[in-house]
Amino acid sequence: MPVTPLNQLGREAIAKKGWFTAHKFLLARRAVQLAILGLFMLGPIAGFAILKGNLSSSLFLETIPMTDPLLFLQMLAGGFFGIASSAIIGAALVFGFYLLIGGRVFCSWVCPVNIVSDTAHWLRRRLGIKGKTKISPNTRYWMLGLVLVLAFVTGTMTYELVNPVSMLHRGLIFGFGFGWAVILGVFLFDLFIAEHGWCGHLCPMGAFYNLVGKTALVRVHAPRRDLCDDCMECYEVCPEKQVLPAALKGAKDNKPPIILSSDCTNCGRCVDICGVNVFEFGLRFDAKMEACSKLDTGDYVKNQA
Amino acid sequence: MPSSTGHKKLNRRKFLADTAKTACGVGLFGLALGMYGKAASSLPATAIRPPGALAEDKFLAACTRCGLCVRDCPYQILKLAEFGNDNAATGTPFFTARTGPCEMCEDIPCVPACPTGALNHSLIDINKARMGLAVVIDQETCIAFQGLRCEICYNVCPLRKEALKLEYRPNKRSGHHALFIPVVSSDACTGCGLCEKACIMEEAAVKVLPVHLAKGELGKHYRLGWNQKGKQGKSLVTPDTEHRFNLPEGVEYDYYGKGLIDKRQTPLTQPGPQVEKTPFSSNPLDTLNKGFKEVK
Image (tube, rainbow over all chains, first blue to last red; front, side):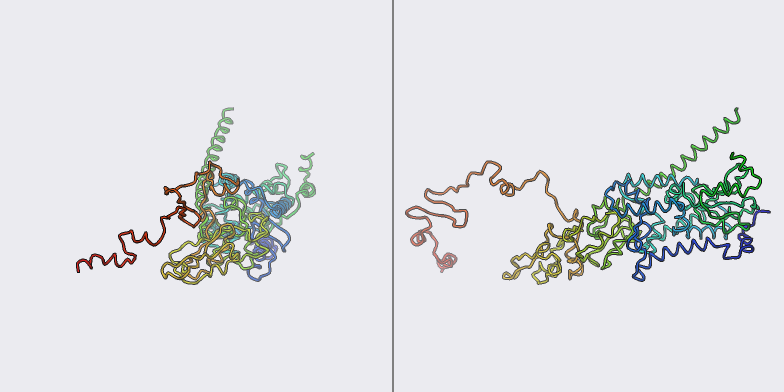
């Protein structure tokens, strides 16, 4: 089967599974992203707060505190050690959650910039913008280092002055000022300069959650990778396409059919878009079992022995 | 193998070049951000932090910009600084005294709301808050200094008579009225800004400033003699010898109000015959008109 032309993207999945199933996880993600934003905005608009604050620190139902662990690290790097208990508990809760569910689940299911960069990518495809500036995806780790070094050197959370993630979220809830210009900058950067430029290459928060999710339990599997017809649609929609080959085409190298790279944001777009249902969500430990049962040739089992 | 070595070499070179490129790019971004941060973290004098806020540099390390204090302020005076609009560090909470001062809630709900302690949780008495310091900054236009009765700042002060007192001074213009001058005590002023809000002037004559701008500080080596004397119960240096006027024998000077005391038989200040001895008449008019009379 040939590579699907861009204007045919998703047609096969829609034809076979129906539009709704072919957009299941995309819709779920948008719903979660907007719901989280909505719960935060409920307080100022309706006067009834389910979630108070913003993604930097918040209070759920007036009891459960949450704090961004990267901000927590910046506090320590900035030399503030007298941190109150609710920030410590809050950072631990958030850290623990992403440790289990997948670090970059934050990026694709929670972060408001995801909608901006996904829109930029969608428009990029629609307008046929090809120009690509090559940036190493590892640049984000340098950025993460920079964020902590800046906090250490300046003694303040310097990166928070321009962090588009907190700026967008805080802006929507508390007022933007000219913060929209920074978000527009991210949008234009992703649209014209580099594909998945911000979220996939530069964002230090992404880098941080990437590290948090190294051992996360929830993973995308490719149990039916032998059905793959090389249409390349998953590569087109995946925001971190470097994670796909090992799981999808790793059979010949005896790699298990599971995306283990913590770059994967668990967005589920590959699950949606695949016309032959190669992918599904599962747990980390399921990998070997699935590999044994699905590979009828038994090569994988043999080579493992 | 030459080919594999060459391949390896190229990789290493490429790796180093790429690393240098990334490091330079990120480094430049960091430099720019650091510079911007330096400029952006200087708090404008009109932006006042919520009660209990740590010293500004510590505060900026501790505040996550979450806005929980903003949400828990019952009077909704707090605002998170907006990028480009407010000059305070992006996302940090502040209030502006002239438009919305701190109402000094007894339970200070904004403080425990802070998850990190950037608003110090040990502040439980709002009267101990030091958000800033009120200063009667324009003594030329403040109408109290014109001799008009106003005292609005005094009347709205939650710590009236402690933080803001009225001091009576003679009105030199009219000659027989008092000026009711507002005077702030830095020992008690919390910097809530209610006085600045209430000031009836077009532009407030009393303003809350950051303490470091409002207060002078005496050199650490400086000791005020009378304070030290009070502490020790005596002078710390050799006591001054008592000042003496060069007075005739038998005449003394009392420093505490009585003035000159003449203990001689015929005192210098004795009225009566002595007046006769001067060349001047007891009536000053005689002296003034003296010449005229002669010409006449």
